[in-house]
Image (cartoon, rainbow, N blue to C red; front, side):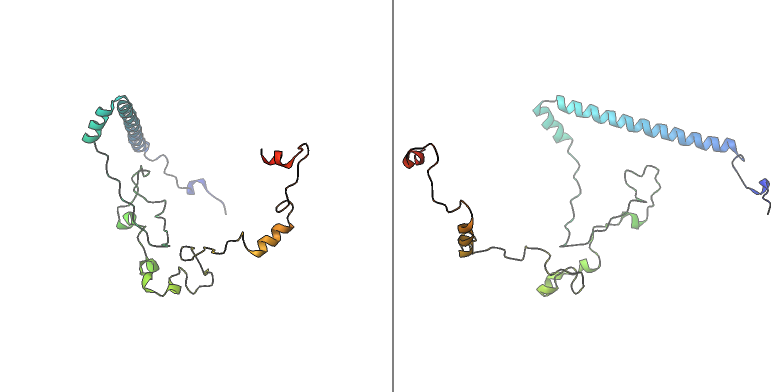
Length: 191
C-alpha cells in the first residue's frame, strides 16, 4: 500500500488567529494568577513581620480582634478500622489550580467513615470473634498485648536456675581478693 501525504489529517493551521487569542487569554490568566500568589505571599510576610515587632499587649489585642479560624476536628476512628485513601486525582483541593475537579458528591465524600465490617459493633460479639479477620487463614491469634497480662510475678533474678548460672560465671560470686600494691585488705576496703 502506498501512503499518500494528503491522507494525513492535520488541523494545525486552520485557524491560527483564534488559537493565538486562546493562548493569549491563558497566558494572561497565568500571569495574573502568579502575580496574585506573589502578592499574597508578600502580604503574609509583612503581617508576620508586623506581628514580630508588636509588644505583648498589642499582640494580645490583635489576636482578640483577629481570632484564628477553628480547624475541623479529627474524626474518631473505630478500633482497627480500615483506611481508604480518597485518591490523588480529580480532587477540588488547593492543588487543583485548573479547576478540573468535578462537583459531584463522590469527590466530597468522607473517606474516613467506617464501611462494611467496620460499621458493625464488635463489642456485642464473643471475645474470640472480636478479631479483625476472624476465621481466615492469615489471622493471627493475638493482635495486641492490651488484653494480656504480661506481668511475671516470679522474680527472674532470685530463682535457682539463675543462681546456678551465676555460680558458673566468672567473677560474679568470686570472693574479694586483695589487689596488688595494697598491703592490707582493710586499707583497700576503706577507699
